[in-house]
Length: 436
Image 1: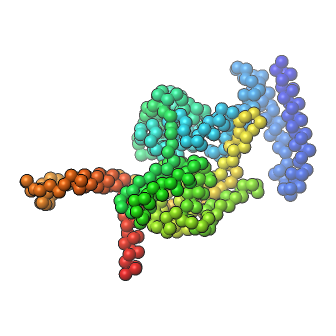
Image 2 (image 1 turned 60 degrees about the vertical axis):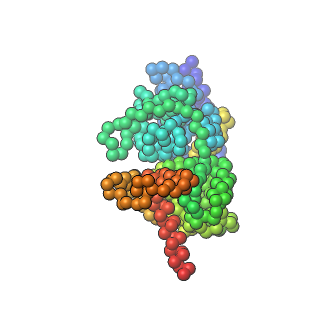
Image 3 (image 1 turned 180 degrees about the vertical axis):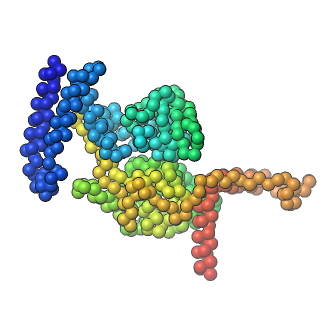
């Protein structure tokens, strides 16, 4: 039986090679008949020998379908960390992930040296609340070593029924021994755009990931901020944003640019060469901007930061970004699955490649957590309010002062945000001085 199956497989492979030979002439003509484009008969023969040997000698019987699927996975995973084969279930999960709601831990991950690397924890998820950080390497999922797993297999284990627990063993730079962190799975509902007014005239917009409706949500957020009065400055926070939909990144960049390139891509085939340009209309009409990034800002986040930086539309602050500047194209297959294939690289308007380089901020900030200064009681200056039986100001004003103190303390706890706000204020002071 095994011999018959092997013969049938070899016959099918022979037919496939015949088809390749039939088309080889046109392929060689298109590529100048280069030697490198000839069919690798020796390697294909080796493949059939390995396939036959596994089928006949492996300790347990393995279905041909499984062997061929594993071969396809191997071809793609050997190219780069982002190319992959997606079975029908995995392809379905990928489509669910772009809608903004799915079950799991809330981590964007990739592969590095056979381990799972955290690109970024997602805001308001079990991973973020447990302190998972960009750059963490996951080496175990419960008691299962990650080494040898595909990315898809690892993601499948991390996702599960809400309320169930999983323990991640993590290696973190600067920490002597592995960390064990237990997380409880939950339904991950990603709110793509958040906004608030930090101080009168100074707005804050946080984009957690780029989804199909992110551009639309950004317009609404800016409109809400303007209701409290004209904006004098805006902070766009892309920290720990793992990326997402390309068109959303283009829409966000376009919201603040009047003209020029936003991003372009370049690859081997014509379809991989794309260029996106801004359309007239700046949502905040030239108001000063700061874009915050860090090592967890990847892909679409880097497109936005790079475009606004190249056009000198915003000051980029924080840490150097992740450096994922490649384009993955999803190509559906007849079996209901798909392949995710890297087909091009992203370039900023000035021609900088983001891939493996990232975006370097205009102002680099260290990894510092600035806590509010606590003044010793005996060194506080004497004021009217410190005198006994002093006349109270009034409930409404007192409430406002308390809110103001809370806001100030929140800003001080977030060093990046605190510094970004100072930069915006400094720009406005300089502008006012220039008008005098």
